[in-house]
Image (cartoon, rainbow, N blue to C red; front, side, top):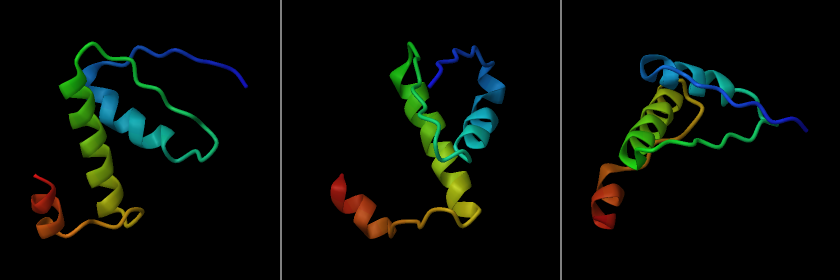
Length: 67
């Protein structure tokens, strides 16, 4: 296994992340100084996967019950 470090512009990060997630055997670690930004990017990626039918969405009531 090899390790590759990428520096990706913020605007391209969601696209690159979604493309890398297509590979099943790649482990992705995100190193970011801004934890909120990282969470938002992961959420955008999950939304895109739901739209493509690769993930199943959770009911809004279930989400609200966690809050």
